[in-house]
Structure formats: C-alpha cells, structure tokens
Length: 418
Image 1 (cartoon, rainbow, N blue to C red):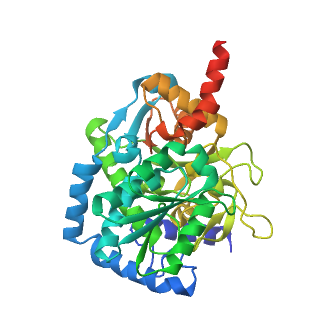
Image 2: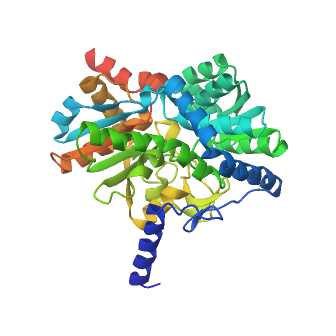
C-alpha cells in the first residue's frame, strides 16, 4: 500500500468514527474488534447483542439508568479547576472527578448499566473480573442494589496489593474467587471469568469491566462510560467558557479513557492523549504500554493491539497500578491510534508516584495510581503548552492504593524525615 493510500484509508476510518459508524455490523472498529470466542459462547453473545439493541437506548431503560446514576451513583460528577497545579505547570488544569462517584471510580457507570441490562435479560447470577478491584466493588454494589448474585474473579497478586477492595467486595455480598493460574493478575482473572461463563452461558451474565472483549462489549462499555465525556464537555463550556485544548486520560483496557474521549472525537481542535503504564522500562514484561509497544493479535475474544513476543505468546506485564496491568487494549483505542486522532504516550512507575504526591500536596486530592499516570502525562503536556486548557480524567480515588503507597511513596517520605 502506498503512503497516499494508507493516509486516505486512515482518513476514511476517522470519518466513520466521527460519524458514529463504528462498530460495524460485525463488531469491527476498522480492522480491530470482532468476535473470537468458543462456539459455546456464540448464543450468549448473540443474546446480549440483541438485548443491547432492544434495551440500551430504549426510553424506559435510559430513564431507569439515569435515575440510578443521579440518585445512587451521584452524577453528574464535579469538574474541578486545579489552581495550584495550574500555577506549577503553567497551564489551566481541569479535573473530571470520577473519584467522587459512588464506590470511588468510573467503573460504577458501566457496572450499573450492565447489571440493569442483565436483569432485563433474565439473569440472576453475575460473574465479573477485576484487577485494581474497583470494577469488582462496582459490580458487587450494583448487584446488591438490584438483588443479583455476584461472583468476582481476582488475581492472587492483585488481591494482595488491593486488599481494601477485597474486603469491600465481600461486605457488599460478593464471592471473591482468587485466581492462582497464569500471571495471577487481570489477564488471568478474565480467563477464569470466561471459563465460568462458558459453563452456564444463558443463566449467568458476564459483566465485563473494560472496553475489551468480544463484540458487543467494547461498544456497550463505551456507550455506558461516554457519560463522562458528555458531562465534561458541557461543564467545560459552562465553567471555562470553551472546550479544552487537550483531553488526557490513563489507558489500561481503556474504559475510562474511551468514555472521556468519545464525545470529543469530532472536536478537531481538541488534542486527545492516552497515557499508558510505562512501568520500569521498554522491555517485554517491564511495562503495560500496549499501544506504544505492542503488535496486533487476538486476546479475550477481540483483535487489537497486544504485548506479545515474536512467537505471538502473550507476555506478562508490569505496572505499579493494578488497573493498568493488562497486555491488551480496547479495539476502539487501536483504531484511534491507527487513524492518528488520539496520541498515546507512557508514564513510568516513578512518574506516577510523583504525580500522586504532587496532586495530594497541591490540591488535597488523593488520586488512584491509574489516574496518576494521566496526571503525569498532563504535566508534560501543560509545560509544553503554557496557558492552554487541559482536561484530565481523574478516573478514581487512591484509597485502594494505600498498601502500595505505604510500601513505596510513604516509606520514602518517612525515610527522608529520619
């Protein structure tokens, strides 16, 4: 393919994305997405796809979802101007405060919406996976609210570093199943949740937590999380008097990012940046920078960018943040990268830890380690674009990260005082 042909193809794909034509009828975002699953799951996915078409945008479903989001979740979440970070970084810094949503992160938007959908489909039992624990907590809370049984699969490694969330899930009535196979993190938890679903694909509903997986999950999660960007867009116009010059969010599987980005895609004067986990370095196993360092392949039912070796074997990943510790990414992010509409960069463990400290000290806000990656990327952008407006997705609060912060950042601060 010539450079001109490749450019024209990218422009066509971007035009389709802006026009809302993705995913197509096959569940594809350009070349990415699709449905790569065992035959036993096809009926369940087709049933889900039919339910999404029938219920998701129906007036009565949206009315019920909107009421619960307003009265139980606490939406709309605040848009907060950060004056001291703005002064330090030399730009106007605005924070979209998903940390203020019920259960402490953006995950509740998707968990509530899917739980309502599952109930309409007749499911009584929900299975979910979780890495940082926030999706598990959100799923447990949504199931408790709606009277559904909830089983959450969580990698043994993540259970250790996210112990507060394990306790919260159990208090909310969920059964938390430790996953001791594979890398014992989010990838292994998704594997186990899929195995559970295969064993009872009609009686059980799999409440997938990110914008990954087989069609229609990437579309469904995007639609449920896009409330973040719609609110932020309206709030920026009302409070700042203009759209942001840049919108920045962290990217693991990609649900908070696609939720923030999607309503801004057609705003061509707004730059969009996704920040991945750069971890300890650029080598395989040292990071979770799928879009920056990966290659296309199939994982968990979808064709997208992956971290894999030369033989196509999926590699273990690393991040100080459990929620970004995943070797794949949502197919819509892969499309946005391919078209150039969104630029994806990395922030290292150390940059994320420094961002936690700076946000705490400057604004009195403890961000999740995932969100801290977005703050680190926003600081770089702000310092290179003085006076401009930057909107940062603060995807969650950092209470859940206290065990990790105690061993790293707080231990260093205590040592420095001695």
